[in-house]
Amino acid sequence: MMASRAHGHRNRLRRLIPRVLLIVFAVYAVSFAIYLLRQPHRPWPPDPTPRTDVRDGVRAPTSSQKPWPRLPSFLPWVGGPSPPPPPHTCEAYFGNGFSRRVEVLPARGGGGGWFRCHHSETLGSSICEGARVRLDPALIAMSRGGEPLEQVMGRAEEEELPRYEPGALLVEGPATGKTAPLVDTGLLNNYVPTGGIGMHTMRALLESARVVPPGELHCSQWVEEPTLLVTRFEYANLFHTITDWYSAYVSSRVTNLPNRPNVVFVDGHCKAQLEQTWEALFSSVTYAKNFSGPVCFRHAILSPLGYETAMFKGLSESFSCEGASAQSLRGKPDYDKTARLSEFGEMIVASFGLPQDDIMSSKKSKGLNVLFVRREDYLAHPRHSGKVESRLSNEREVYDAIDKWAKGLKCKVNVVNGLFAHMNMKEQLHAILEASVVIGAHGAGLTHLVSATPDTKVLEIISSMYRRPHFALISQWKALEYHAINLPGSYARITDVISELSNILTGLGC
Image 1 (cartoon, rainbow, N blue to C red):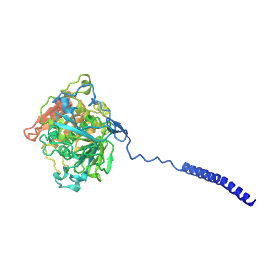
Image 2: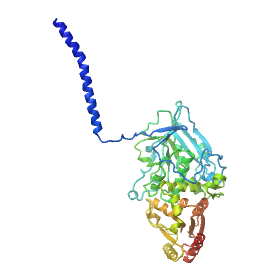
Image 3: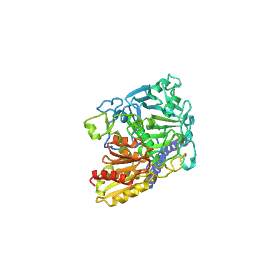
């Protein structure tokens, strides 16, 4: 009898314990829910891994990079209705003349690395790109880069330019392969020739490149988004930097990137004012030596040197090329005309969020702006004295005379003092966009003409020591009305300058 009662008691306990546990769990759950409801809302932290789509074998970002802005002068670079431009035509120089595709390391099914180059017979250079590419900063001899200028005064230029050890660049190859050079001398001579460039850093990087089997990259981090590898030379000079910007822009378009890429500087230059525009044009900017170890890229693009662009080669190579509106070229393609430089100028303006259409529509309502681009002293780079060589010995006198003369005109003319060395890039661009006339001595500041509006007139004052075609050519390639005063020395006669400017303003209805 006692055993039967004990057995019944144990059965009741076995049935009761799960019920108690269930009640305790329910009370806990309700309490936790009330706690959460009383907390202020905090968004979840973003996913640190960028989400990507796979497009043409390349992982392209969906949202982590800046989109391309709307550009009124944009014309298709790849996949358009027109065939590639014939070699040595205007469009082959400025547009997609990179029509020969060289499969250095063909893509394979099932993923893995690949490497190819797009070659331009016209420019004698190539845009190369690859997937699953590693760059090892430890195998690149150069200064760190990105330092404040004041900290590196006196540093030699040779310390800032990269020298590569074998394996500085790796590309993942097939499973059956062995470690071997990516390219041979014959391929480099055919598609990445030195072309008279004393230190061709892109060629040197490719010479260092090796193909390795899967699993041999050993990356400290992966960069998921398309990234441009850029080496700069004359990085503090606006003309040369614009050739670097243009090369990077063309590389992005020829490789059909869906968004603006990241940029990695494979050089050791210090931080300069023009870096602000790199940051505006592209999604992000960093220096190769800032990576803590070997860095791997899902998609890397090697941007050609600025010396290999049409803007630079046009100084020494003669080719027929006139600027034209994109609208006219859409209706009637002409390979001896181009809207590419206007497209690029719009890209710079759009990157700073300037409302170009609004500025153009309000230009004449405020009077005619005559922008005098001045040359003034500033510290440019570690080897610079801070003194700018004068190319117009009486520049201040000329500016003051024009300003005084303009105040006596019946029409409203505003003379703008273009002290660009002490203006940020957005202020400089705004001044260029508002200008009806741009006047100045030969100097890098006039390179801003690439962003000038189509109705802008140009007056360049050229001393006998600087008879160079830079800005006459940019004006021609942009279809801008160009005038020049060629001086016997570096001194300009006030009456000559005002006479020429008066004729230009008469043509504008003043």
